Image (tube, rainbow, N blue to C red; front, side, top):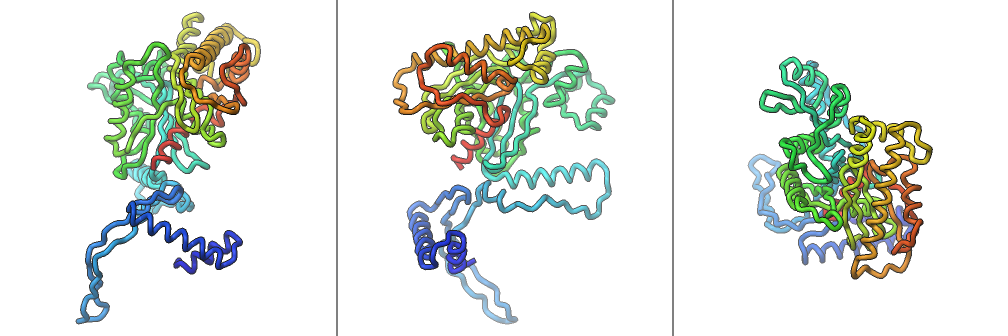
Length: 452
């Protein structure tokens, strides 16, 4: 396509007259030329980066025997590095694999899987978002209007080692680590299934929102689970991962260590990795129409994270250590059941809008009420105590997310707690995130895109 074709296409797409479209195209091209001369690099959202690079002198071989080579003088050239959105929009054809010389067997399946993974990684482009939660890790990729998400349970279980057991795990594609030849550590989504079979509790790389200092294999299992979700790269893609806020009135001394360890791990895999507050990520994911102004709440396993933002700028962030694990642990204690089993009951059948049906639901209602009231009171007190809050002229929304907020009736109980007493800010609406389980990961992805 040359400039004339570009003007013709602009005329067709905009309905402008040809001379009007021509002026617009000329103005755009002149602006690009001027900015490239001044800055050498231009970022065009949805397209990519335009680089002005030096071009070395070269020669074009003659097409005729005995002819002389044509000299190409040194100069400058413009190079386009396509953004993730542009790459994805260009790769609209379904993935096709060549099946020539197909011998069959596990090796061929492995090669097919690697080919698909490589093509998907190439399509993901320059940005990824990772929600590092106490209960689950969620990876978000793809364009903002069609985000892909995949998750792994952030847990593991150790089973006795034998060659036979290892062989069975391999045959069933179960993810595991060897531990000095004495145990096999089954991690990720399969860990919960093994825990239920053996009637035992899973072990967690994280506790209370950060890496678990009491767990010997915390970092090695975390690394294995992340590598299950994220492939290594050589392209330096932007990766934004969630980090919790400091505990209200307590501080969180291991937050610095937690964030640094994750950043170093992701950087070692080839990414440009930075942390982003978990509550702020919810704002990014859900409040674009409100100019990223409002309160984002992420109710996870280890913590509830809260952020108040104005036009994407965090005004106040904090966390509370009453969350999903607090509920599971205390309900398990009063009912004599393992927290893993309580977690399953909570995720599969809990309805907070109806009367409890058994002793487990009765206890779940009690501890959910405790978490919701504590969350609202912490938010109310933090706002009342905050200094130099911006003067917000209109009501702002509150968006809830996270697995702990997912049971039916949670939203209404939270709304009732907010409305029970006068709230320091005027609230326009209280709603649930479009997908509570992926909101944080999507917000991390959006932050990575804006930095691309």
